[in-house]
Length: 364
Image 1 (spheres, one colour):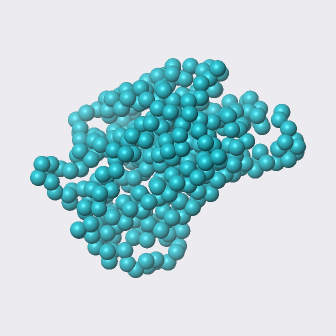
Image 2: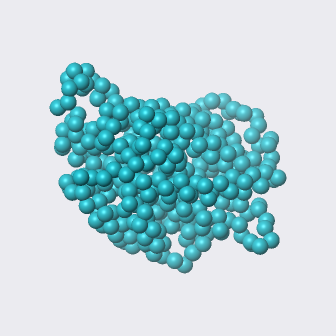
């Protein structure tokens, strides 16, 4: 019998928020500025609203399978083959998520810290702790996210220290070009808000399932506040004409911090931020192994996890990606993430409601 290890509401909340913030945090201000100028921060509020609406649909959907994942729910209402197809789709989706996290992290490490190290070597080093944590399930991942959040509380104060160089007038006037640029930028917020879909597989592990929606709203709100804070800081530090020229303005702004005992503050920051990066690929690799095991009808998730870790290292050894490739993968995830985490819950919720109405609430 498969053991379900409980996940607390705090761990659930922080796991989703850390997943969302992990890789999108560094480039979001640049992307918003390129599409909507200094009014781009308004799109974050719309992204929060859409993520909250999708969270409502997700929780209502999973209430139909309180003791099972989305795969059990699909098997119940659509059949075993539909659940197999769903497992393959989720496997591919979270494998791309993990690959995206490894790619961005390794490229940034190579650019800022270890320029002479091969990318596949960096990925191999990152995969060792990933396997150790992911093999123990969502409870271990939740504890990891919980600890990491508390030891990261100093980061906001580091960015607040750069406000002595802030120019508030860069933000004015608000809506200088009207609502159209802001509304057209909302589509960019799908990628930074990805992570709410974890509830598809986390729901049966929750201790207090009745508080799942509250936890998701809090998680989305935390993510929104982090995004708003760092975006406004970057918008007030860099001029509207130059912010688009920085690939990682969140890192570049740290150069303004001067400490007598550290020459380059951004270097230890990047090294520390690797922990935040890992919050996307650790749960993603766990979900890849879960769906792989479901697809093959076996419960040896640890073996599947080891094989997928090996496959990722081999993929980076064969093909070494660039920042252009990372941008392309981000664009793909922006579209597929909208389908998987925003549109799919609504469609499945409608389908389940219709089927239950037709069957009179009886199970097949």
